[in-house]
Image 1 (cartoon, rainbow, N blue to C red):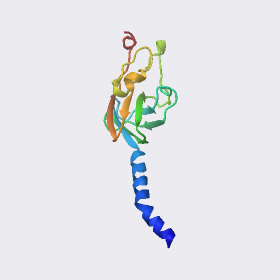
Image 2: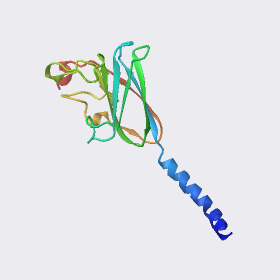
Image 3: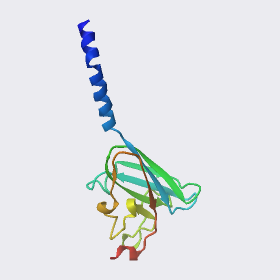
Length: 154
């Protein structure tokens, strides 16, 4: 009887503790609308990064999707904890699974980054592409562009 009484006495504290812990550990989704695609051609490869150290090296999540019935695709990164993130997108038009480049390693396929971060002599910088994921699901848009040699100059 004493055991039951002690258990029920501490039950409200335990319920409060576990409800607060689950509220703090909430994960969110990042929905990305990608524009600048061609209808029913190629695939979109999206990589999500959660630190400057892993940026453009090791994504925490990666999605591949065909374009939609128009010139857009919508991809959703699910169950992401709060933090800072950046997204890199490749429009893999020939579906070979990689970014094709030409002279001076300039992409011949469309690319884009979160915050529409500019490209200067390589991928967009982490500081320009990063965004916070704090306490709610996030929706964002990335407009893909085909870059030319002039995009890599100051």
